[in-house]
Image (cartoon, rainbow, N blue to C red; front, side):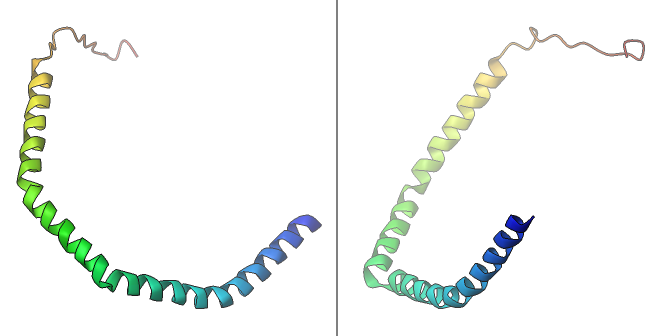
Length: 93
């Protein structure tokens, strides 16, 4: 019991001390992340990626549509008469 109490007290102290230092570190990390995200090289790459997606979207949509049609035809082509269905009546229960 004493070990659990010590563990709980240590966790509480660590949380309090970490929260004080943690907020300051969090603000520092978020500042750097925002600065990086807003930088010209990153924004340039984002715009290039957007343009690429817009240009290739119709081709990808066609491929996805063809794959869906192919899958549908395979499913419809399966023989369903091999599947045996057993009905349960109240007598069977």
